[in-house]
Length: 145
Image (cartoon, rainbow, N blue to C red; front, top):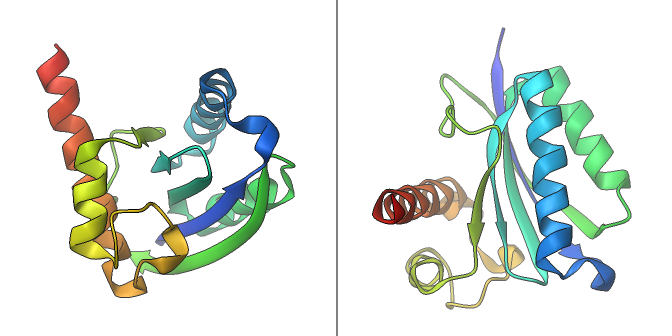
């Protein structure tokens, strides 16, 4: 079974900018992803989503189609899809990285500015940006324990 990693970005529907809405999205994603053996990470700043989905190709494609049809997402853009030997976010049904100072520093390192505009991030930097974001999240979670 070949694994794939898919990254997409979308604009957030203006009606979905509250923390409660994002919490509901994460809860639903984690439930579906656990059932479909999908792992990944979601970055969100109130205006854009950027998400990596990892898993078996058929399950990832099905999830991406469901997200593309979801009214909470507009301008859904596939940024990359590739086969991978192993998962980068294997322990997360759906990790979540909010907009924070550490995120802005990583955006500046991997992109053109510290503004979270996923479509401005060079494709060759996407994977490392997401991995770095997940590490900053892991450090923050350990620091809160």
